[in-house]
Length: 335
Ligand SMILES: C=C(OP(=O)(O)O)C(=O)O
Image (cartoon, rainbow, N blue to C red):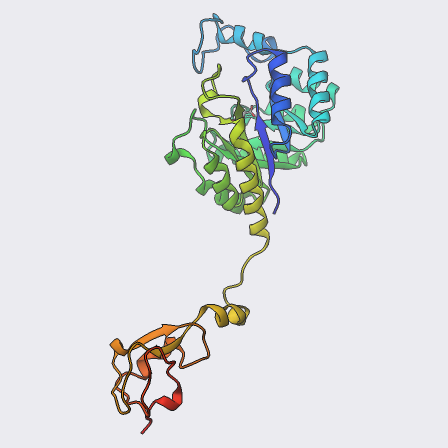
C-alpha cells in the first residue's frame, strides 16, 4: 500500500500570487506528492447572496467579493502549475464551476478533486466525467445515501474515482474525525479510500494511514496565526516532514504483514531473550524446592526452561547447588 499525500493551500494565499509561490517553495522537499489549490471563478460559482462560512475579515463585504479576490488569471495558473512541476509536485486544484474545469483543462491538470460541497453537483460531475480524468471525491457532508448516488453516477460514466472520508468542520474535533468511516467506505464501495483532514494535528493523518487510507489531504499553512478561514484547521509546514515520514513508514509496514501464527520464526530470538531456571541461594542436597528458591536467568537452554517452573516445585534436589547455579533435569529427583 502506498499513500498519495496532498497539501491543500486552498485560500491560505489570501489572493496573493507571491504567497502561492512562497507556499510551493516551502512545501518542496517536505515529503508530499501534490499541492492542491481551489480554482474559484466568482461569477460562475457564486452570487452576492452566498453567506460567509466564517466572516474572518472586514476586507470583503460579501463572500462573492471574497471569491473574486481569490481568483487568478489563466496566465497566473499556468505559472503556478509550472512552479509545481519544477518543484517535483503534482499540481492539483478543485474546480467550483464548470468554467473552472475549462480553465484547468487548458492548463493541463492531471486529475480532479471534488470538494465536499460539490458531491451532488451533478452538473460539475458531468463536466469532469467528460474529461476522462481520475477524480477524488470528498465526503465531508455526505451520508452513505448521498454518496451512493454520486458513486452510481461516476460508475455509470466510467470515471476512475476514489473517495476521501472528511468532516466539514473547521477545525475538526477528535470525536468528529470519523476514522472508522475509512474501513466502512472501503467495504461499501471497493475503491481507493483516503482521508481529508481539518484537525490541525499531524497524528490524524498518521492514524488514518494505519487504518488504511491511501490518499491523504490536509491544509498546509506557514503559521496557525496566519490569515484565512482554514489557518486553525491546518498543519504548519515545519511539522509536515515529520508527518510524511511517519505516514511513509506506516504505509510500508502495512505492506509487510507479520504472521503471528508461525511460531518457528521466533526461535532464534528466543534463544537470546528467553531464560532457564536457576536457584537464588545455596541449597543442600535433598532440599525441597519452593517458588522462593527460584530465579530465571539468560540464556534459554542452560537449565530447565523458566516457563516450566511449576514442574520443579515440591521436588527434592539430587545434589547441593550453589547460589545462581542453573537448575537442570539431572538436579531434580524423579521418583
Ligand atoms: C473543500 C475541499 O475539499 P474537502 O471537502 O476535502 O475539504 C476542496 O478540495 O476544495
